[in-house]
Length: 97
Image 1 (cartoon, rainbow, N blue to C red):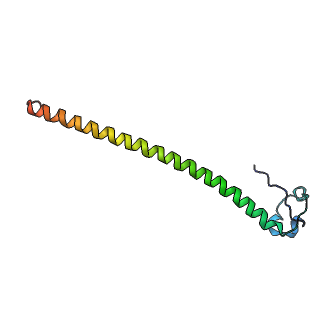
Image 2: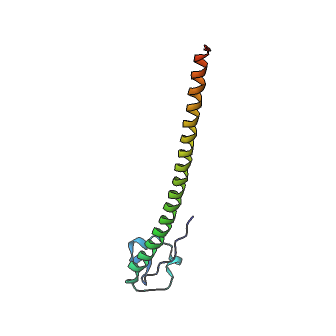
Image 3: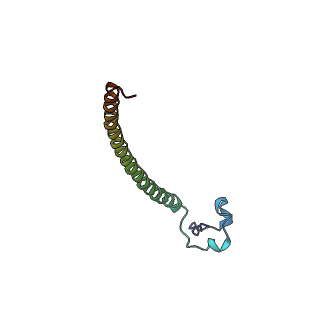
């Protein structure tokens, strides 16, 4: 279970509806001005965006590898198709069915 960090708002938990559900022992964190809340949210958002960007880069790299594998498989299948067609044409001309 994820533990929520103590709120840092300078008010009692019961004074803010979002924080009212937090246990009282988590509300004893250091008080900072309410004007800092948007800054904290911007920082949290920036950190979350950085993590998301990192995951998206990882996905992009994986998709690039899959594309390369698919292209190699396609090349190999085309090479095999030519051989299969040649073998099939040779057996028909020899009268083998």
